[in-house]
Length: 140
Image (cartoon, rainbow, N blue to C red; front, side):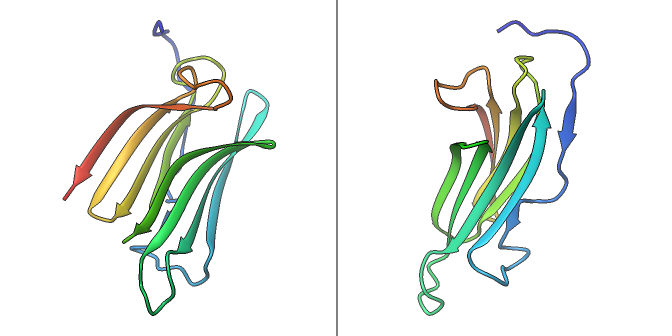
């Protein structure tokens, strides 16, 4: 892939998709989504959080994060029995200049250990939107 010079259109998202550590859900299942459009195509990044057990068991959270476009859907992240369910979309851009969305997404199964992943569309497998190409993890 050759890097191209020029302006880069970036859309930032300052609010997390989901954060059960700072904002315990009032209703389960908890769903959240962000809609965006790139080159005339509409996409949706969504998260779904469910309790991993009964309130008495307190087994944590099950969380999935998906990227959707029309009827097509790709699972980006999944946690089972997480202490915390956290997902934040930081930006959408066409970093690799192929006309499709690239994502910077942070996820965590515990508030003290966050992984930020760069997803590029140009590296996606057939049938997928994006592929994780870089990760940065920080925390305990």
